[in-house]
Image: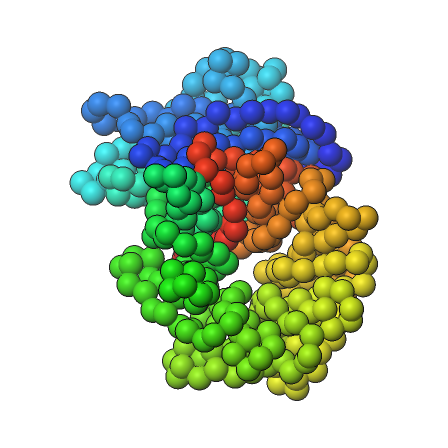
Amino acid sequence: MMKNLLKTVAVFVAVSLSVGARAQLVVDITSGIDDPTPIAVSPFNWSGSGVLSEDVSGIISADLRRSGLFAPVPQADMLSFPKNPEEVVFRDWRILGTEYVVTGRIEPQAAGYLLTFDLVNIFGQQKMFTKQVSGGSRQLRDIAHRAADEIFEAITGIRGAFSTEMIYVLEEQRGGRPSYALMRADIDGARAREIRRFSAPVMSPMWSPNGQEVAYVSFETGRPAIFRENLSTGSRQQLTNFKGINSSPTWSPDGTKLAMVLSKDGNPEIYVLDLNTGKFTRMTRHFSIDTEPNWMPDGKSLVFTSDRGGKPQIYQLTLATGQVDRLTFDGDYNARPRVSPDGKTLVVVHRSRGVFTIATMDINTGRMRVLTETTLDESPSIAPNGAMLMYATKRGDKGILAAVSLDAGVKYNLPSQRGDVREPAWSPYFD
């Protein structure tokens, strides 16, 4: 059912996104698997008064379509709109070739809404589940994304990531001058809002493992400095103020440390900051440039970029022993390493024959696979389920975000309606 053969489907999904956002993103699906699973999300029954502010069934349908694994049936093609499994006429849906039907009911609650939804297997002629999701009065999109996660996992066996979010950097002109904003949005680009605006560049945002904080580099003091910021309260702390390079902050898996790059002792080296004690520990000592650290999921080692072999390649540092091993050998340039949640796959910015792309490498075998086809792809960030990654690229002279599955079978773009966007960071799960 889930074939890996690429097929360009050139589907433009007009997704209604955030209201009042400074830089809305739209979803442009460019490639999906050869045989996506047909699924119908019947319009949900609303038992309250007035009109809901969000089309919950439409958001679920858009989530599933964006995964590339599903082909939602347009409402105009549906022969009926069942509100519960008992109203599903299996023969009618088989005529359309539909494999699954989702039905649902939304009820008002004192504090918001309750969604009861069902997943029905048409060819198996059985209900797979009935589940409920509730949320506050402003959480209809959250309710929809959580329902989509449940449906996605029930069919594919992979935990859904539609309820996650992203942070990215927006650059635009204001009053004839560059202005920079750290933005936060749903993973489909909706509800984009500013975390903080800057008059100087900001870069390298990274979520904390619990999703409550972000670390980033800001030039607001006149030189690069690393900050951590609480996303709920807006309170923040400047962590570094050294001369020279202060860059590439990345949280340890337990959230108690930050690895980073500092040149305070003369050469760019990897350091680890203990956030409880404030102590900096130098981890590398080499005359070459060591940069862009990222933690392995077990917290026992770091991967990083270094030109100690003559050209930028990826190395692994075992923290307990200080041993450094080279990981990448394919291509004349590999940088910006990211590791999949299971620790098996390395994602890098890869250059071969002068072209920068995003590639994956099996850490055990060393086998490299190029995922993208454009020429200026950078800043990969992996979804918490390990199924997709987001990265920055160019469309013409404009910076946009894009996403690709780790098997390269699904691709979509997230261009901004204003300004350039770059440096995406995919959030962890919030539970």
